[in-house]
Amino acid sequence: METLENLPELLNGVYEPLCARSKALCSYLKEQGVTFTRGFYNLHAVRKGDGFFTEHFPIPVVTAQGLGDFGFELDHIFFEAVLPREKALCFDFAALARGYNIEVYGAEDFLTDFYHTGMDMAELRERLLKSAEREVCLCLKFACDTPPQTLFAAAKTAVFI
Image 1: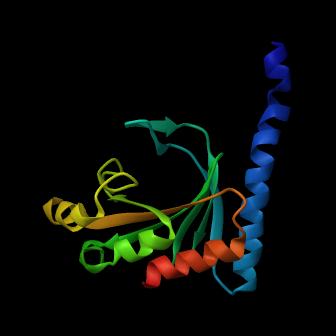
Image 2 (image 1 turned 45 degrees about the horizontal axis):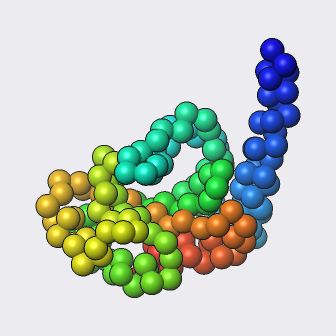
Image 3 (image 1 turned 90 degrees about the vertical axis):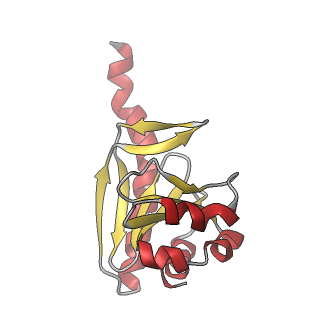
């Protein structure tokens, strides 16, 4: 029972930095005149080795209207946007990958990989063409200490490229 007694302090130690980073982004978005919502969501599937691991615990997620979602994971921040299939087929993912760590996956089946580090970017379009997905998720990953200004600028670059 000693472990359970310390659990609130342990969880606060984990969540306080995540909350602080998400609040900082909210403040910045507000300054920029961007409408947003903030919530806590669980059941994220994250890559672990050659497979995926489902996170049952909630993380802060800030949804910026017209852009996408910023998620505050334990070890990184991500930005996720959904692109219609037609836009994804014309999208210059290679140009974006030169400046950012990106992943591209299915919007209906999140475990369908179209691209992640280690895959051949040249085969991305062909994988998209073979897929029945009507929408594609684009994800950019950042270090935990990435400033809100950098996150926002990257999101705008990704969505409007």
